Image (cartoon, rainbow, N blue to C red):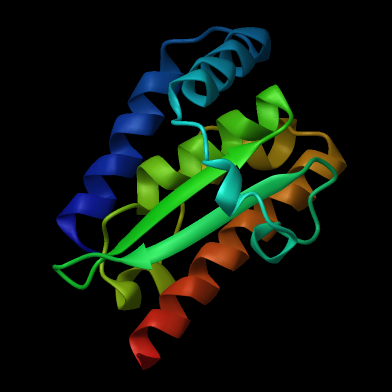
Length: 141
C-alpha cells in the first residue's frame, strides 16, 4: 500500500473519530456528498450505474496523463452520494494496480461496516468492487 492510500485512510479515520455518534457521522457523509462535483448529464448513463446499489449511483473512471485513474461519481440519494464521495476521495488519482489491490481498512475502522443499513452496506460493497474492477481493467490497457 502506498503512502498516499495509507495517509488518506488515516485522515478519514481521524476525521470520523471527532464525532460522538452516528448521526454526526452521517452528517459528515452528507457534507462530503455536497462537496462532490455533480456528474455532467452526458455521463448519467445506465452503463455507468453501479449494480447492487438501491439508489442510483453513477461512476465514471478515466486514466489521466500520469496513467493514474481519475474517478467521477454522483448519486440521487444524499447519504449514498456521501459514500461514493468518500470512496472517490480515497481512491482517486492512484495507479490502477494499487486500486485493484487496495485494502480499504478504514471502512471497518470507522464503523461503516456495522452502522450502515444492509442496503447501503451492499451499495458500498458494490462501489468498492466497481472501483477495483476499473483498476484491473486499466492495468490491462
